[in-house]
Amino acid sequence: MDDKHPTQDVSQGDNPEVAHEKRDINVRIVVGFGAALVVAAIIIHLFVWLLFGFYGKLETPGYPREFPLVQTSEVRLPPSPRLQDKPREDLKAFRKQEDELLNSYTWINQETGAVRIPIWQAMSQVMQQGFPVAEQPAPGAAAVPEAPSSGNTSQPAVKR
Figure 1 (tube, helix red, strand yellow):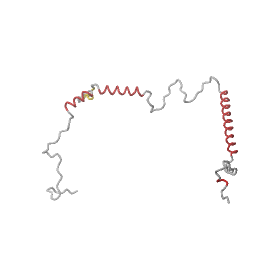
Figure 2: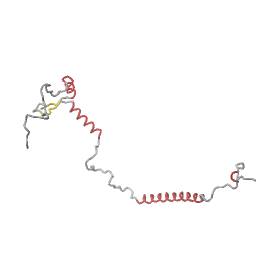
Figure 3: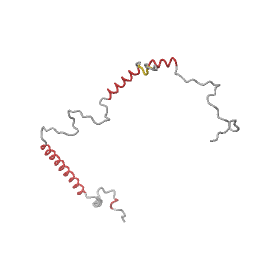
Figure 4: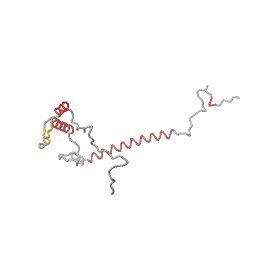
């Protein structure tokens, strides 16, 4: 008695009972759909090529096209705030102005005698003299009045 199933026979190389299932996918439909996509793509490309040729012939040769964003000879500035035209040159000019301010003598207020001195001179003066500090109160003097002690006070209470 042979209990072997015919699909389990490994010794045979070609088993006529084993085949792909035809109910899962129809190969003819898949290949036909792919071919239809290729044909449709070719037709669309030809149509677009013909359309560009048609509109290219309609264009008047030598006619200047004017678009709102085309640059013309007149200088039209956008509304403010505007971006810098030349940021590197602006930065150089700003740094030059700052360097001149830091390295020159200038009156700040002639009435009070306030003068701006160069930064290198100010730094050397600070190194020689030190920073100015506020005077500290003497340790024996009470700068802050003491709060009254709790309990009996010699001053009468103020009624409002």
